[in-house]
Image (cartoon, rainbow, N blue to C red; front, side):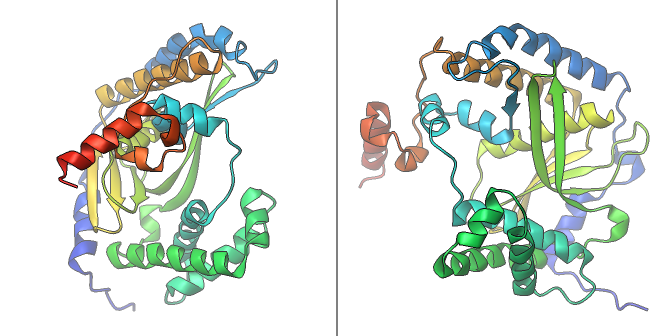
Length: 320
């Protein structure tokens, strides 16, 4: 007989935030998935012509929409255009999330006491055996890069194991769960959920989608999970019950319950984002700026008057 695990306050809070009785779980009408898809069909249909009018368009090309792409274009369009023109390259900050998530996945099914560094090393080894860009980067990474990656991924895994209670198989835990939705066979909405727990029972919602974050709050974090909830609602017919961004550095949740209004507002955001991307790519729209503290890391800063002006005013307001 297993000895019950004594949970710390952070782990107890996770259980309190994610748990719900049957009476507390919402029910959703079976027609909702069809209404959401129809709204996307109607909203994206008029942009099929723009899809083929892009400067780099090829006949039959699909348009891929992710939480990252939508978040970027709904922020500063000038930065979005600049980054879209640059070739993607793997680095330690980008790779650490994939390694940490793989280690967390292994921890769920680990039969021994989960040791974070062992899990991280196993994850790096498994990912390096792949055939994708991450595998290639891991195979060619320097010793310094691998050491830095190991340290940063380990930090995330340690914090996850400290803050989350051991995930029981009965909770149906799934990490890096892939979601995909195709509209008009040309617009592809896709992504991967960090952690999913629970399941729907008929029209009774029960699943919780969780995004693991380091650092501080950003409004985009809410939009990221709403995007996943929309795809899940259309895929399954019953939406998730709750969305939760979990900040590992702080040991706290930002939860949000799923409603029909939330899902339809997400449809509107997807349509708006797709239109912006296509109009920018076809030259029918000049990119706007949205100055913020993120301007400090923007590659356009040296030639962006709005960004430099914002940072100067921000520093003066802070008394620097």
